[in-house]
Amino acid sequence: MNFADFALDKRIMAGVSRAGYHIPTPIQVQAIPPLLEGRDVLGLAQTGTGKTAAFVLPILQKLVTQAAPKQGPVRVLVLAPTRELAVQIHENFVELGAETGMRCAAVFGGVGQNPQVKSLSRATIVTACPGRLLDLMNQGLVDLSRVDTLVLDEADRMLDMGFAPDIRRIVSRLPDKRQTMLFSATMPEEIRKLTREYLRGPVEVRAESTERKASISHAFYPVPGHLKAGLLEELLKSTDHETMLVFTRTKHRAKSLARKLEGKGWAATFLQGNMSQNRRQEAMTGLRSGKYTIMVATDIASRGIDCDRITHVINFDMPDTTESYTHRIGRTGRAQRTGEALSLITREDDEQVRAIERKFGGRIERRTLEGFDYDMPGRMEPERTRDPNTPRGRRPERGRSSGAQGSTRRDAR
Ligand code: AMP
Image (cartoon, rainbow, N blue to C red; front, side, top):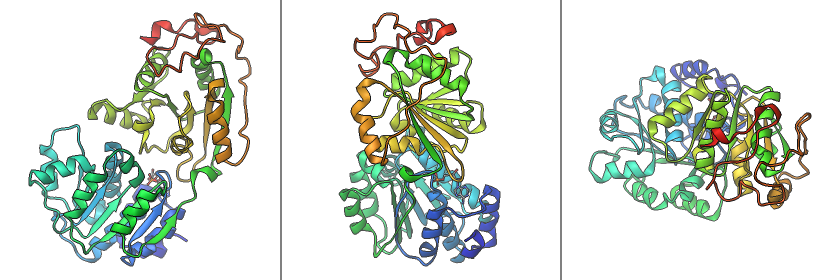
């Protein structure tokens, strides 16, 4: 199957070519035809599967076919959990819809509202985080009375983040007669409930889950906790990577590890929850452009990180749940590319390691890095004391970096 089979308007096909898409991804093959017929769709798919274009393309087609006014009123509303995801979806609309002339706006918190209010007043397509949108609705600054297409993206994440009441308030003010689509990486009962409430006779589609994604290979690197930073650095040196995403357990650790790597000459940046919108944007743009080749991030901040350059995901700290593991590794091996998921594991991760292996249906390869001194003593912590990484980032790491690198304490401020 190829894009021509969807019989999309030539202005939209121009967007598809511009984006460099040649073959539709499985979720696009499944979702686009029913959406073009006007059906509601329930999509079990995570970021990285091409799900955004799966709804963006039919939505653009619908607007073009109906000769919708290009400068509002708002006809399409997309709700997304994070600013990053909202911006990415918005950019997808802008890129794929460039030739259609449809005006798009992105609405999210953390920045001044005036520019958003202004672009909202002229937009046909709006991608929004629920909190800020509701805020603007309550101020009477947005008219959603003409919305006939609603998308709830990463619905499970929105519920996890406590947006359920906001979503209900927003949806209750939309016209009943509309086409609705809901995408979610998981399908817990609350999502089923939302689906029953909001979707009418939906067609269910699902993308191949990351667990079975052949394009990602997994490996575990057992290491004493105090040698993690040193091992990471050696891995960076010995791995042929384009861009790496490194996960830590806390915001503090993300920042201090990124600074530490930066101090050693790596093009590293970080992304964590309490950064200003401008700093986040700078980090993401830098990652996409190749200015940074390493991003250290926390779980929440990583939602929706969309960068095709990511060839490796490294779990510097193991995630707390198998679900987070799945989400983290889903940042690599995107679209038609391959990726590697490498995890530094300590004895304290045993339980989590077993859970992940159960979920992924088999033993994951253990690797040791040749030439790395695994017997190096910790400077201040003998190996048998508590892993310094465990106390949730209250202290920066105190381990030594490998061999020639010397102490890393200086960098860990
Ligand atoms: P998404 O799951 O929507 O976040 O998409 C993941 C990445 O795949 C994005 O960078 C998209 O631009 C890209 N993408 C989406 N559809 C295709 C396609 N058919 N061919 C190649 N890349 C695609």
